[in-house]
Image (tube, rainbow, N blue to C red; front, side, top):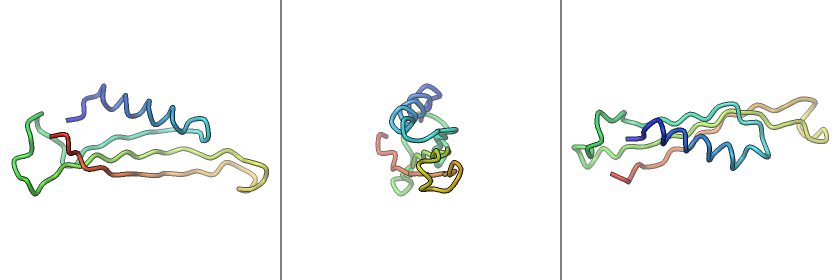
Length: 83
């Protein structure tokens, strides 16, 4: 189970890693399925996943991307194998 403190750590790490190159406006961390407790999943076929979604904008750079910031949203899903 990802705690609020764990989500905050992920959000801080993502922002610190890419924040120098882009403007990060939101980092969302979700678990699927949402765990009911910290106990392992009852079924071996149901491996939980964690998805990190980043939203932001890439600043105008030398006219290469047009005349304004370029908005983006990217997501990456990982298997939660720590159970």
